[in-house]
Amino acid sequence: MKPFTVLAFFLVSLLVHGQSVRLVHGQSVRPTTESVAKHIQFLASDKMKGRGTGSKENKKAAAYIVKQFKKTGLSPLGTDGFLQPFTAKVRRIVVPDSIRSASNVIGFLDNGAPYTIVIGAHYDHLGEGRQGSLRDANAVGQIHNGADDNASGVAGLLELARYFAKNDVKEPYNFLFIAFGAEELGLVGSRYFVNNPTLPLDKINFMANMDMIGRYAPDRGVGIGGYGTSDAWPDIFKDVSGDNVKFFTDRSGSGGADHASFYAKKIPVLFFHTGGHDDYHKPTDDFEKIDLVSEVGILNIEIQLIENAMKLPKLNFTEVK
Ligand SMILES: [Zn+2]
Image (cartoon, rainbow, N blue to C red; front, side):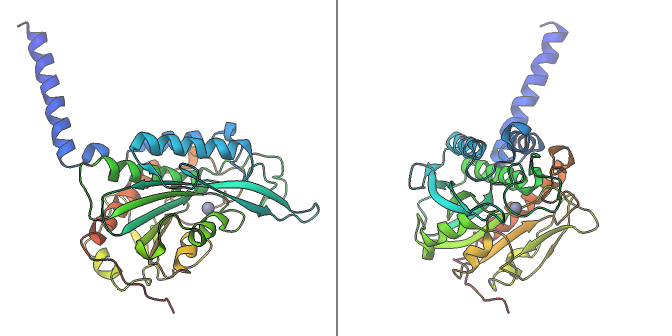
């Protein structure tokens, strides 16, 4: 063999070996900055016009999530394939209220287990500023891209679905991945789901919600809510640490995001959130401002927590005082 061929063989065998090692440890299916970026760039592009409930672009976002769920190998568990359609009311001050069609997107990873872990994130946003609350009075007519709120959470949802579906491990729990619609109109999609569940609520172990996980601030850390919703959480959190991100817990199970709908049904919850910022609900919540490396770090913390929780029986629920 020519020296070049020898070198090429050596490099190829290194790559093949590296690949097999990564597969054994599930590394190759772990969240990556590349795929997190790809999902956020698509959902938060100007073409998607802010994914307002009832818009054509909102349906396009749902179709994108369906495509990813299919690619991952999840089975549909909506009421119309992967979709669970419902209607949501847009409340307006100067013009009459309007009724918009919306959908949750629901994919199931069936491990043949008695109980199921729900992972969720909402995919709707404020459209061009005519829906929902606005902090910037001049923003009507401008595209609210919602890269952090909540393309970042949907990217996390898709990455966790890929990880748990493709890691060659048959977990002792099933997973239900839900992208909620109409969150910005008042948690409409998640409330619709818990009142019209496509899987009995008493079969749900806990729910983990991601809403705005793209704007990590090193001095604050990522907040993880719901710590008080089961007395198993302290055990589960023990020894969990992030490579490049730090976290703090808070006990609350309610608050203005979709996990609150599950907490209201006495289901333990976790809520991942990197905190408010100046671009919140403004047209400037853009992809360029997302901290991709930290988002992947947050997802790896979430994976550790879920894997620790799966070593235990179904969690008990505790009310937070
Ligand atoms: Zn949100």
